[in-house]
Length: 181
Ligand code: PRP
Ligand code: MN
Ligand code: MG
Image (cartoon, rainbow, N blue to C red):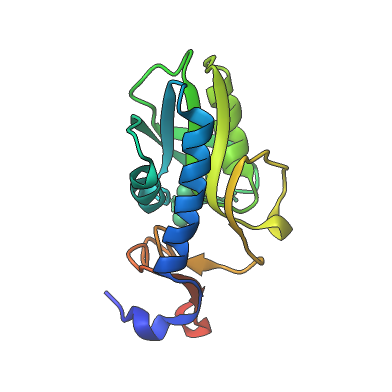
C-alpha cells in the first residue's frame, strides 16, 4: 500500500463533479432508452465505479453484464489486437447495448470491443465513457455519452489505475512524478 495523499499531483475532477456529470449522462441515457431493452455492458476493471454510480443515477433498472479483455501479447496496446479474458454472460442479440467505460485513450480497446459486439447482432450499440483523451486518439470512436474530455495526461482514481493501484481514490487526478521513478 502507499500514501495516495502524497502520490497525487493535482486533482482534475472531484467526487462531486464526477457524480454531477454522471447524473447528467444518466438523465440523457434514461430519456433515450426508457422504452427500449437496455443492457449495460461494463469493461473490467476500470469501469467498475462508473457502472456502479451511473446505474444508480437511472430512475429505473437495467441489467448489466461485463467483459474483460487484454491486449494480445506483451502488454503493448499499440497493435489494437485484443483477447477476451471474460466474455459476456448473456446473448446480446436484439438488445440495445450501451458499453460503459472509464476512459477512451487511444481508442483501440473500444474499437475492438465495438466490432466484436456488433458481430453479435445487437439492436443498437452505443458507448458511454466518463473520460476521453482527444489528443491520444489513434482511431476515431463514435461515442454518444462523454463525461469529460481531458488532456493527454496519465490519470488515476475512480477506477483508473497505475499498475493496479489508485483505483479506490474518490477523485480523479494525475500522479506525482516520483511515483514513476
Ligand atoms: C484502460 C481503460 C480502458 C482502456 C483505454 O484499461 O480502462 O479500458 O485502457 O485505453 P485505449 O483507449 O488506449 O485502448 P486497461 O487495459 O488499463 O485495463 P483496466 O480497465 O483493468 O485498468
Ligand atoms: Mn479498462
Ligand atoms: Mg488499467
